[in-house]
Amino acid sequence: MKKITIFLLILLSIPIVNQAQDRDIKKLFNQYKNTKGFEYEKADSDMDFDGDWDFGNFLGNIEGIYILSFDKEKGNAGDLSKFTAKFNKLMDRKDFTTMLDIDGDGKVQILIRKDKNDKATDYMVVTEGEEDAVFIWASSE
Image (cartoon, rainbow, N blue to C red; front, side, top):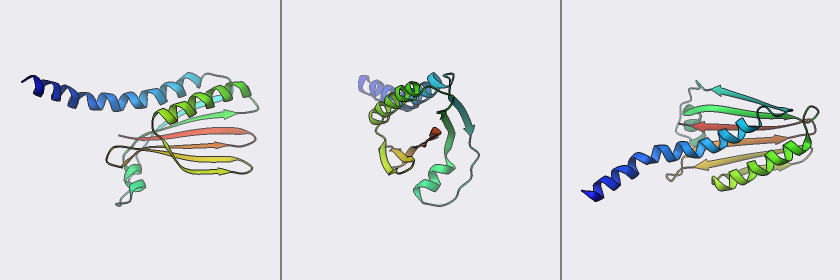
């Protein structure tokens, strides 16, 4: 009986743990949303995509899209540096992997996080140019 109880507790805690992963990213975005130069937006998704391809399935299950942008003219470069350092640590800790990394006049990076079944759960798009930096996080249910 004790083993069954422990198993049920572990099983019931899985959704909580998954939500806790997302909470750290939301917390970081929320921490900077009122900092001068940063602007935060959350868009709920009503996208309807068909198909068996991984990204199409992911898009059809998006819970929300979170956007944190930074205007370099209005904000402090030091605040962007602090945010970026925290962001990079969080991406490493949350097991995001880089799918695309382009450096040129600007920087574009696409990161992905997958579950244990190799299904995409999160996509992060980061762009940085001369005038702004944008961090877009799309999270599935």
